[in-house]
Image (cartoon, rainbow, N blue to C red; front, side):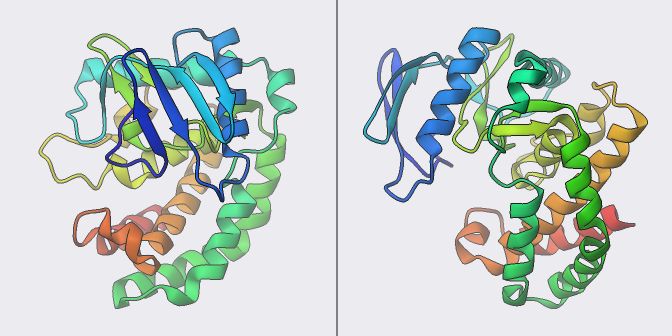
Length: 269
């Protein structure tokens, strides 16, 4: 668990972590507790063990390791990351995953955020990329929603920030499930490779090589197609966040918004 990028109150104890959610949190403690309980049952050791929940807070076991955000992703670390994410998506049986509430920032919520914040996007490069993205989204949104309903359900972590993946020298474990819920594998993988933490770090060797990471999954042609569409959606969403929200822009290196505009245009082809 890291405090550098977290938006919650975190108390690190010798053997546990106490996570207090914001007063305006919308069911985040419940989502976190549910996911940790499911993973403790179906994939023990992959995530913290749930210990206690009360008054808008969750106490969980403390995991060893260092965050992958900002770290060099060697072949060993990339292999371990892919193993961990694959284990997450395989952990909860499909019928049980299908009964979960939808994850936060699903297709509808992400698309709604893009449409509602588009007018606040600033900068000529960002506005050009936004215009292309909105034209694409206008024609793609229905298909994205349909694919969400027809894809095999998985428990989605719903947060691809590399700060949520801990490397202990041999394996990777996962933390932060406050937005978790029912999702599908292409959507989750798309969020990971398009998360700003995957590519915007300036430290040499840091960041996630999307091609190398995705090559570790045997995606079907239909999953590959959905993956690309979902990557476009997340790239568009990040463009809005990085160029219309000063707080998000301030948390990332200068020029990240302009780089995001180019990234979106490249994905749109």
